[in-house]
Image (cartoon, rainbow, N blue to C red; front, side, top):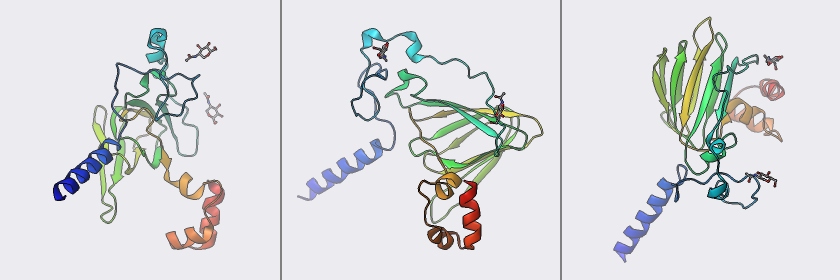
Length: 215
Ligand SMILES: *[C@@H]1O[C@H](CO)[C@@H](O)[C@H](O)[C@H]1NC(C)=O
Ligand SMILES: *[C@@H]1O[C@H](CO)[C@@H](O)[C@H](O)[C@H]1NC(C)=O
């Protein structure tokens, strides 16, 4: 009986760690079939005989993103929606452009860790560990430096220069997902009751109303 409990806990533990990232492939590839409406964890596979080189291809990542927005940054994410051949492979890529002093605001990826490298410029980056420590781990990066943002932790980047900067990230999911903290908390549809946010943030209701209007 005891050994059975141990075995079951082992099975449960193995499953929970496996489910923390994209499942492993059971074939060479499974190119997403946009025409198939089957609901699976990812997308149904296109007939392998019909697969073309273009199913694994994207062009245009040399072009800077448009950073004319209030935060001064633009993320160009190349996920399974852009390259159907990424389906089931557990990876994706992003280019992040920054205007002078632009930020990629605090956010997290529910399904991916991120490995980030600066191609041009200098950036302040950081992430915060989970409760109760909430330790802020931060560093200043220059061209060629690489930094890691662990899955599910809130992180951000800021351009420290008067010129444009850009970076490239690898992400450990075909569909990392993104939760931008300000948008999720103050800009949800429908809104979270301001009374809840007043207590959560310990500020005046006017501050919450202001933020809810902004997002
Ligand atoms: C989806 O169907 C259209 C029309 O039949 C076809 O042209 C296209 O190639 C199909 N796409 C895929 C991914 O199979
Ligand atoms: C960049 O975005 C801004 C704001 O949306 C827009 O006004 C501008 O035309 C865009 N620039 C380019 C080159 O697309």
